[in-house]
Length: 452
Image (cartoon, rainbow, N blue to C red; front, side, top):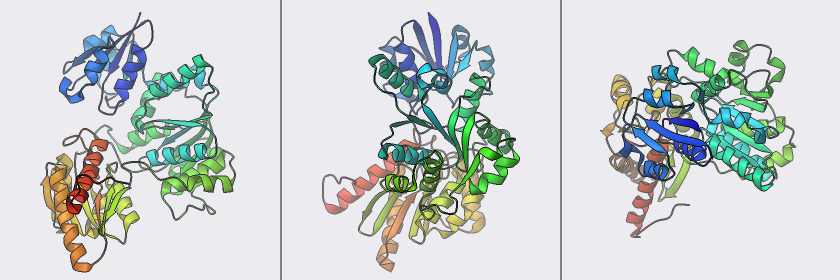
């Protein structure tokens, strides 16, 4: 009987997927351990316990770690956690997926970077599917590698054809954990992509070099092709060795999406690079509509545009989003939890905003408000609920619309993490979208107002 410990249930579904995967396998005894209280996870513990999973919350995990034959580490659990030294074996979803026989003949496309990972993965997967090549996607985009592994095993048992591609988003933490679990022996990647490079996660890393080093662990001779953003090329080549012949850049000179969103530029270059024809790629990507919480246009109603960019968790992402919306007059909702990052990267965006509304949090209090006051910029809040922040921003947008008779944009682009006020980035974005729906329904006199 193999004893499996899922260390870190988490709020994004990865721990749950791991526990479900092993609970469904004969010969496995499964435990879950998380430092957070049980009530943080809604009905998930009861769901797992009904399947025979033992759940421990709010306590030191060292006894559970000693008990386990293998510890499945959630990427949110710091690698520096002292108790991890007690583990007989550390693993994660991708160390299992990459070494499974069912994945051996599937082409792997892996994507990392500070910004643009999720949208790039979604665009590449959409393009492949639109051209008739089945592709599954997983990773930091919110789909566990165990979910994909379970699908591959079921197909294999049923004699059903496996997908041709798996497109994978990997955060720096996931790369680190996978690299350690596989002793540096990463699998063959058909294509590995670095989308961008900004400061991030300094609440978990001692320096920017440590953060970038984890990103760069993904790349090596095991990559058939490597694609990096033009701005990142010099950095990439100066910090890697013997890979120059494999490295290509995007968007390049003849990219038909050069004036479009960055994920389309990257997806076009990626699909062309692995052998698809330009005409087919352009047609396939032309139907891509984006993914939730990444510059997601929620609604345009009575000259008010509502954009949900909840996944913008670093200052530079706010600047990118504001530039994408310019020259539209934009009322910015920002702020949240600190990741030990500076706010200077969003200084220009703050100066260009028609109004600024703050969500409360450690980043807001210790970093953002001091910057605003130093620059002499007015702001509303900070507010402890999305409803208060939303109502404040909408009030400002309505006043500007009525005064200037121009379309106004209400943009949720926090530039910070979410966890002090929200379950996660998706919860933050979903609350914003729900308030848009309520606003339009109330204004129109309807009981509900569906969003397109």
